Amino acid sequence: AKQPPSAFSAGSPQRSSAQFLTRGPSVLSVARSMTTRQLLAAAAAFAAATARPSLAATVSVAALSERIAAEECWDTEISDSQTFYPLGVQVHSDPDTADLFDIKYSDTFKVVISNIAKEQYVLTQCGQTEPTTEQVDEVAALESGYIRKHFSVPIQTSMASTTVLLGFLDALGVQDRVNYVSQYAVASCWQQAAGCGALVESNATLLAGQQAGVDVVFMDCGSDCSNVNGMSNGVHVPTSQEDGMLATAEYIKYIGAFFNMETKANELFHATKIAYNQAASGATSTPVVAWIGYTAYGGPSWNQPTFTISQASYKLTLVEHAGGANFDAETNLANVPGVNVSDAVAGNPAAGKTYSFFISSFNGSASNTEADVMANATAYFTAALATADVVIDETYAWNPSAYSFDSFLSTYGLTSSSDLKFVQNSMVLRLDRTVSEGNGLDWFESRIAKPDWAVEGLAHSLFADASKRPKYFRNIATGEGVDQVLTKAMCGSALPVCEDVHSKFINITGPVDEEVAPTPAPVVSVPTPAPTPATTPVEDSDASGAPLPAASASPLLGITAWAAAAAATV
Image (cartoon, rainbow, N blue to C red; front, side):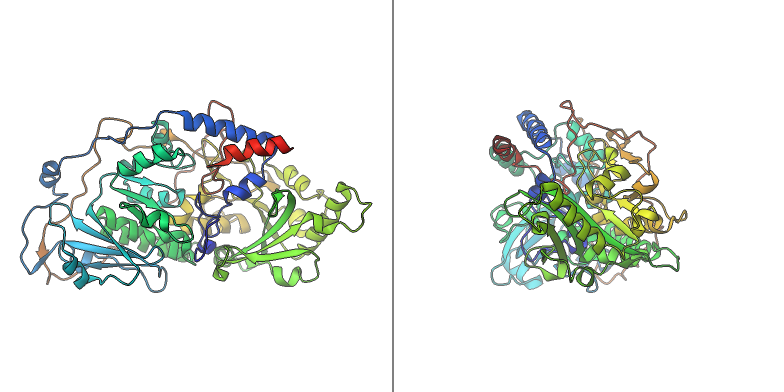
């Protein structure tokens, strides 16, 4: 799981992380929620995937002379009064949102500072001479313990090693500059790229070759970020370690700097902030919302069935912003025996709390059967939810389309005649309305860059507000299905990983006088969510017939050996 100071609190996960802001389940938690048959199917599918030939890292890229002719690069020698980065195109982290990065500008280069990984990324305008250490120090002195890396921008090739970054790359429109993506990617062009073999390798040797063949490897961190520090082209993007939803969204600026797309990044973030503040419902009621889940493989030994109530900070913020009220877990669970309280992200109290009910803790008598113990646990758990008007069920489903209200009732030992308010009022939500052809959840991808879509989607579901567009959430108690299926056929971009083309040129204005007044950010229309296709939900994702879960929601890297060992002991 992601180590401190990560903060799932904002909402986004990563394969090697725990869950996103706290955000999606980790490899362990996903595996724990799967049956033995599902684990074996996952292992088989993974083995098949990793056995495929690796995509060659040699995609078409434009020569420097072509890029200069297209005004993407400049070899013009500039005067002391000129710059490629006037104030009007610069970006900086908003002190009210993201606080884990900064960007400082000079005339021919900029310095992106990543505070978690303790790294500086010196981004020099292509065609210009790389600055000296002394020149960079004048702009951003290298703090003790920090590492400095150099890149030429805009970068032409890259790897996105985690799905939490893909929403930003998609929004910037630079899909044609991404060579490798996770097999759990959801957006249409990422699925198209994956279909052409542009998948991040699990084999260490092949992965190293992929990483060495691109300009930048966008990465997440472990406990000490040594994975990033040890790679000359590794770039840490700490979006999942920020504490707020808008803070995570602001990383559109951070990533945009590597593509010389600060102007577009500023416009997109500005629009997102406006949309986020306008997305809440105007309803006067404030339904109490609880985020709940169940796994058959909880506990440190992977053998403890567990109920959970999540109080991750970003989820609490989302509910409040959409117009709801949050379930008070601390008060309602005060008298429930055997409840374990932990940080939503280990070591980071700001990320919120997770309340776990280990089913084995409710064994009141040695003579109790397994069914008796489950019944006792269920009774305590559901009684604690008496004040909840709405529940959001995060229980992992191998096939989201097959998870219905009946599935929910069975999972939690309830019947349709239960007097719980969320049952009687038919208010049981899921996060799997928007998926890929392979049943990957878009909740763990586009939501990171577009928190306004999450607020609007939740407001739509909480209040049946037809003025709000449905997104991510579906009400299984009223029979809503998985009706937003993103397909690779929806990709409208020419991808170098799929055909013999190079990426579109990214033009930058030539050197301008530094005294030119900054251009105010244009007023842009609020972007709409990704299209809601009327596609029939897909049941399977590959030839094996085993649908694969979302990357952030279900990182399965390394699960093959575990599944085999687990099967041998069941």
